[in-house]
Amino acid sequence: MRIIIGIPAFNEGKNIASILLKLKKISKDIIVCNDGSTDLTGNIAEELGANVIHHKKNLGYGAGIRSIFLKAQEMNADILITFDADGQHRIEDIDSVLKPMINNEADMIIGSRFLDKNNEIPKYREIGIKAITSITNSSIGKKLSDSQSGFRGYNKKILDSIVPSDSGMGVSTEILIKAAKKKFRIIEVPIVVSYEGETSTHNPVSHGASVILSTMKFTSIERPLTFYGIPGITLFSIGLFFMVWTLQIFSETRQIITNITLIGTGSIMVGILLLITGIILYTIVNVVREKRN
Image (cartoon, rainbow, N blue to C red; front, side):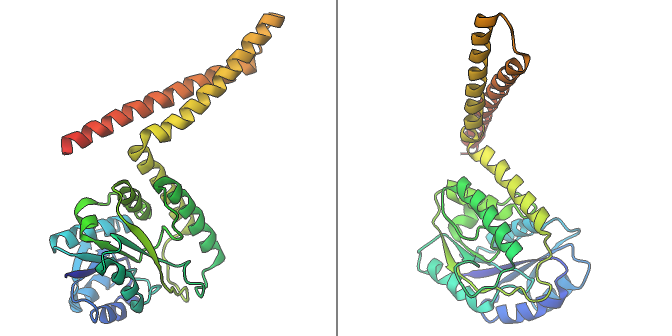
């Protein structure tokens, strides 16, 4: 069984050497995506024997994960473990992520920061992660505790059928949406994290915005009738209510209340537009999928 560990890294020269030396005791197959680093991250990784993918410029976390996925496929990996380069994760927890996959209990394992009660996560991070996870859960129909963890395990089924496309932090949500759509088995295991020192380079506001936009984008593609249809029907119904109200007032007073009429007309038009958009996108998506198959 070929186990590959993938590390997306941007300017992690201070951490990458110690992490690689420890990881080499678990697997000799390590992929480092040097995402346009301006320090010695790539050089250090190469000196320590890692398979290094060089991005000429910083393309984003998602682009790094995509490159790692493609390289792992090329290397015929049976299992891919993605591991952050910022020093948050413990090497010892890799066994917890690997074990369910080796035992064929799941196709995708997420190392959750919230299943271990000893983790001291900064409050602002906890609130943000839980909010994003709630949005993700509503899109995939599962109840996860940490949808944004970068510490994950993927088996060969996942690697052969999913290629991430989001270049930003929304890639974690994208993979979950695609995996849930294909009914892959997804479970979580507890991990320990450390937030001491300067660990994360991601701005929490931009991270949250990226994930929300990504969730909306992939939900609209995977479930266009639901994404556009429910708001469309809701607005159309509201519009009908206001139009009936307008007609009722007119029949009694021979007066047209402009505000009520505009609300009714606008709601009906937007509702119809959303319904048509959902139907068209649903048709296009299914035609593209049929051609691919």
